[in-house]
Length: 490
Image 1 (spheres, rainbow, N blue to C red):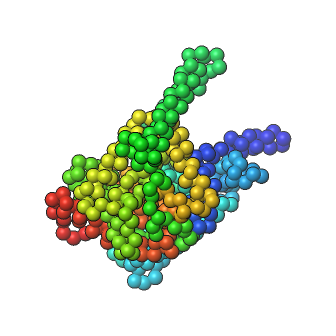
Image 2: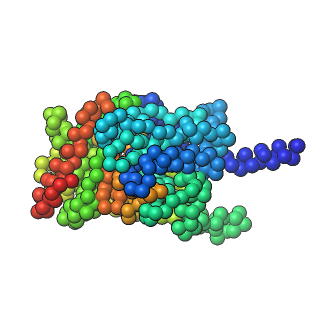
């Protein structure tokens, strides 16, 4: 008996893992007003040869399989007496209630997208229960034209946007006839997906007797400190306007607008798709990228929104633009992201001149990141983001705004995908507004579309739905300034 008990304890300890500090930061910053989970709506069209009720019941049964769950869906937080500010461990939940985590909801008639987004807004407003694994999935029926939807949310301490895309890719198939008998939350499904990627190369740990290895390790640490010091010098110079090679920084000169209020816990979520080719054409016309075009659209839309409130400032808005630093072979990391500052140039009336200013700031930020390794970028980001964390913890972000909004772009599927025969029509991300940044605009590229999800504080940004029309108007303005004919229809 003693041997059996000791073995069980050994297995339990082996299954427990320590949460990295960079992930735990999302737990530290969470409050009722600032839930720190990400998520979104996926929209599907069912195949003609299935019954909608039968199909939904089959997917519910698969998603509610509790055996063989992969992490982090199988794990629950394990805290020390110091609470969330001490070491945080994740351990398997031995009694997970899958009916709590996987739910179904039917929209009230007429079942329009409006009702779907209203439901998503309410689902995204509530905190995840920290005594349970930090995720939920809701299957949504009641839409017309044989469409169904899912709303998934997972704590940002467990997954970033890129990790969420890996999860979705593991459950999708480019074959509309493929049917899977295992849950997309299972180890089986995830291991099958991971086999498509080369095994990540892990550098060997230096032995204490290996002088050469120790020398390389010390050289790497010295290189990190030198690289980060150089980047910080550029950052300080840009902040005080004495150099910085075109770099834009947070805090300095950020105007206070409706976007910079402290927020409440209620959310408003709206979404829309645009043709990826159309957005790409705009970026190309300005000798830029798709991301440049997206920033141009968002800048124009935010400018129009503030004009409608008669509060467009003379100084330009600034956006925090998260950047993934995840290696292509890294499938398992929860968070691997840095951030840069984009000058949205909202004080400039001409859309072409505004786009040039946006691109100049992004080019300077990208040049700085290219000069650093991923490890250096993580250290640099941690140092430069500390003042923003301080204002968040003290709830003074409305008085000392670091940015005006968060604008994020996540690469998604490059081909038409299906979930057990249901065609994926849209992937609309819901993300995190915070004090001082009451609106978050995130996009996912999805086959031939780019899907925008706008998440805002319901009180601070009361007319967030207007942003959809303003984004279209901003795109038309960019097309007109570049001499591109706007295509007819949506």
